[in-house]
Image (cartoon, rainbow, N blue to C red; front, top):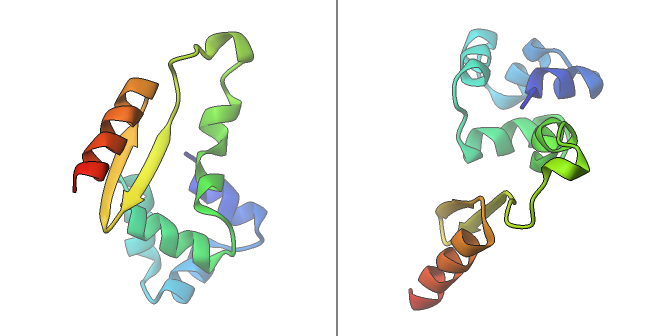
Length: 102
């Protein structure tokens, strides 16, 4: 996930985005170096007017077709404030079943 490249592609600097988010440049830089939460990713995406899935495009595009198996996927699910991640169809089905039980 190379958010800095996407920020640059959109014509912004880290300083610009930090200012739009109401944080300082160092805070945003540290966020990007760590493991940003969904909420932070959404704030960054909103600041540069893009979709949060754009941040993951490099991970998907680096896979060639023959590397992707039928059971491999990435699903990010938000339901009533809870976040889930599934990497197989079985995991996705399990998450959906858990959500239905709530």
